[in-house]
Length: 351
Ligand SMILES: Nc1nc2c(ncn2[C@@H]2O[C@H](COP(=O)(O)OP(=O)(O)OP(=O)(O)O)[C@@H](O)[C@H]2O)c(=O)[nH]1
Image 1 (cartoon, rainbow, N blue to C red):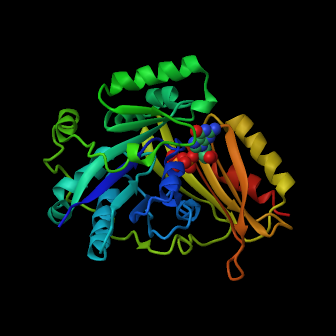
Image 2 (cartoon, rainbow, N blue to C red; image 1 turned 135 degrees about the vertical axis):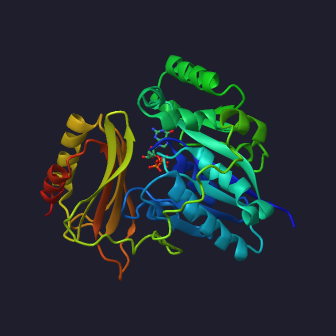
């Protein structure tokens, strides 16, 4: 039996991982990929933002980082392999705050999984506009670049040629061997990222001498996290107006937290947009990432909002389903976010 190739897709928050994944899921390549998406924040928004394709999307709703990811991952990949019939590959999008090594390790350390799969490559998407700053304030960003077999130097449209060359040189210093592709909206021939047999165990061992040793991976705080097969609609952390906040990572003195906001009442688009632009103007440096699916008054379609720091993008999405709760949900990840103030601001936009 041929081993199923596994691609680990990593890169810091907002770099362009989902954009690449959506390309893979929509391009007519005639292959069947299983996709494992790591959840963003507490309410399941990522599963909702990955386009519907024939492929199944497994959403892992994990609170903390690597160990949990690995606990869930073994379960999910195990389940995929049981039903796998004719899978051409498994793609795993890690959270932007995770180090890729523990995810990659899973495919060597778990005996059943190792027998049926083969790590094809670690693909890291780097944000040309923000990578330099991330390398200063976020150690995971450097690890993601160092561990890559293939790097997409993405968002090339947002920087000038000199900056792009400088960022590329920085990536080269961190990782002399990876193939680097400059991209806009993660546009790269899929043959450059999938099925390349790019993963290099020797190099992984030189970066992480314990790579095959197992270390502390035995413990699993993942058992109480559930995953579901039909997107994330039931990841409902209840209470309409209670913003859920959780600490995701500590980096020096900066604590990165995630926060979710939700309401069942329609929002006023004009109010919302001026609140958001004021917020990004004043706090954009600290807001690493935000995503939302919004119900605007008088609008029959879902409004999808997302952004990185000061840059935000909104698009009208599909119409709300007849049976679908028209609920606005928003998740933010940032430093020192004030949940009470953000909730007040968000609720202030109710029509
Ligand atoms: N201008 C520009 N925007 C981009 C590019 N690639 C992605 N984006 C936008 O950047 C934002 C983040 O892209 P995603 O693909 O969701 O990033 P991600 O890495 O999956 O984000 P997380 O999963 O939250 O870490 C979205 O608003 C994209 O539309 C690019 O090359 N140029």
